[in-house]
Image (cartoon, rainbow, N blue to C red; front, side, top):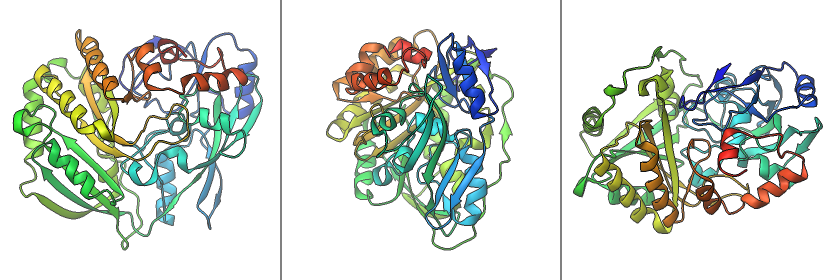
Length: 433
């Protein structure tokens, strides 16, 4: 069948397998004849879950056990964050780290070592994984954690599925007493003000900024900074899964410099005062785009890519200004331009975050986009940064290996466990893995 990532580019013909048991995965691997990669809910943006043979985890969606005293959940890799929230929020438990969508699998969250609005306080998703089970290329199932087979654990966490098939994991959930968030929004007139607000409120658990990436001059980087904390009192209820749907590809011409400028102007000025405080449910705070099913169709039939990079703290302001100026000058705006602060990096070989600031932008794919992004890559590298593998669809091998210094150690672990060349993807081949 034809398959693509969330960005709808590239589209390739794959042999899709949908095993209904752990044993069935072993059977598939025993007849291995082509490169294979695991796939969860297909929310990685590019080609990291595309290969000649794709093994879906959609039927590996079982809860196995829960330790009510310590909040330790054991489940299969195909369980979604949405299902965890639906079942455990009413019981007083929440995800320790969550990305901007709840429609991803546990296996996918581990493979991409996803992060959220609280990285500066609580690290990545895998920092809360206590152990996992992995099927190797030989068909053997092996347990690993930060203490047991730790090299394999640190290679699998953030390893984009290139060490084996994750089948289950144990994650420590976070206790909550309310399903609501106290949100405080600040209006920043430029990028310096935005950075100052991040630094002033670094003790706040959740922080994120929306940036008008087409603003120029003294308004460069004008932003809305949203801060959040779990409220201590209130009901424990999940949100509604009701959403509008965009069932078809919208015309590409709808997204242009002028429509994005208009949207950005209206969105920035929706907040009339410089500060606003209110209580909201966790759904709109963490998952605003989940209220629009198939929102990737907004970008048209040619698809889109999300360009996400991180710059170290020492180079954050200068580098961000340089990149935002280049984007504004190009007219290639983005509805989604999200800035977050990162804390220290972890021990995982290919995990994306380093201490600094990350910016994520969506661009529709057109003839000149990739050459423009090559120019941004050069700026990112010059400032000691890197790109996020879960969003990438076009980074070259030189850029990857320069910005991920532990790639060779990652390959050594893969070689030791027989993962090369069995577990691979179009992305892995493109970046020299």
